[in-house]
Amino acid sequence: MLRFKGQAPYRCRLCGLRFIAGEERADAAARRRQLSIADYLGLRGYARRIFTDHMILGGLISLLLLLVSLILFLSVAFGWIDLTSAPSMPKMPSEWE
Image (cartoon, rainbow, N blue to C red; front, side, top):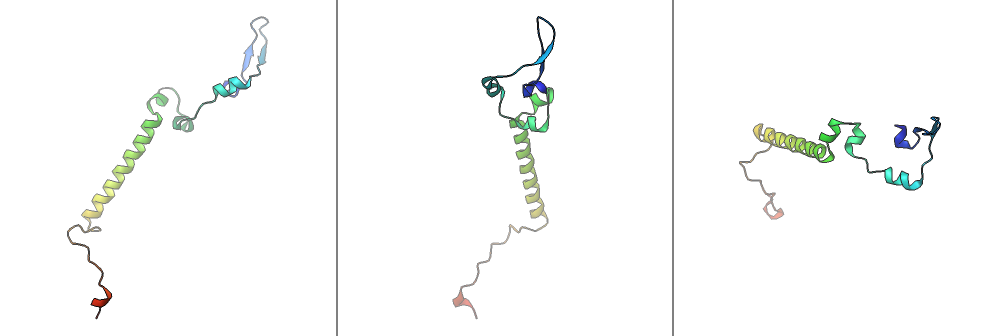
């Protein structure tokens, strides 16, 4: 985790002492990248390779479409939506009696 922040301890090759290296702005800007949904969910390793942004968004959209189609099916099945009768037009003021 400290390597991502640029505060990781390094070991000197000559004397073996540990130190925290300062980083230049160019290195920090190059290291920054756009975070994906998998980053926000904390997925690592194999799960991160499988659950890409496209897979996560596609799964959510598929689930939403399935839910909408199920609600539409149930509303027709229970008669909440009547597809057999034509919609009634409101009467014009001249037709009122």
